[in-house]
Image 1 (tube, one colour):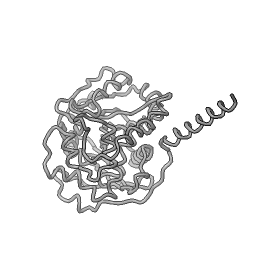
Image 2 (tube, helix red, strand yellow):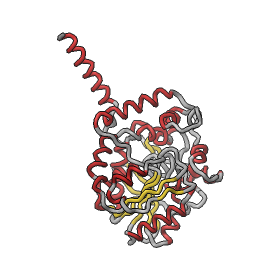
Image 3 (tube, helix red, strand yellow):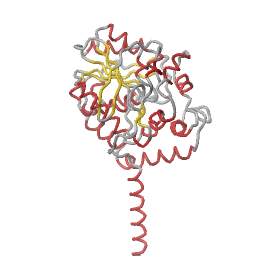
Image 4 (cartoon, one colour):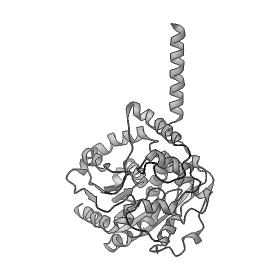
Length: 348
């Protein structure tokens, strides 16, 4: 009986160690960095904005800062594998209405520093760096807008310093969270599902539908990261060759692609921390909270319901499902997003 008990305890200990080893670490450091040559960004269509740079926890971040400096800022965060170019159609409309607009490039994207090792990227690193960026600029009374990873990161930085923010608007994003057993097992099981996909060379799922695990495997293993094909697939309008080239501009070679490749793999890497944020912050968030998801995004479809139901500040808001809005909704419906955002701020 003792032998059986020892074996069971031993196997349990091994299982706990294995699960612990697959959890995302909060510790990170700045590794080797690549920077995209400025010539790659010459003459991009509809991107006449002045470049600004800020140091944040060892990284040099590029950001746009348009409109009057004394106006309350609108913070626009992009996701993967886009950059501030995604907001080129929205920024002029917002500044014309008298607003200051700040759109940074995340670490690994756009004109910001790009760690060349996938191991130097983590969910926590992005939260820490972007939170430091907001503190460095000392932004206050912020209207936050996030899409894709812009929401995963932005909703965390808002939760870190909620007093800096006046309102939140999100589109096609979320905050992957889980408590209890799934908080521990969710990420290991996800990594197992990605491993089972093996090497994936073709974008999309075998059956023609969307499989997130397959998309993650594709990002990490494909020998040809089809940037143009990705953006055209994830938008409802036809992008020009020049626009598609704009999205590919930051990625000169493989050393510049580490962030784009690893980001999807990190999506469920902080389930327990996000669960804490949902319980402690957003379950008590009474400031205005608006969702404006697209009707043609298979990645986040239905994700807006959680926020509408769980966040007190979302009650009574005119939440919208935007027709003709793909995953990169800023490309498909920029005017509609701006219209909703301006009305949202005006109601404030």
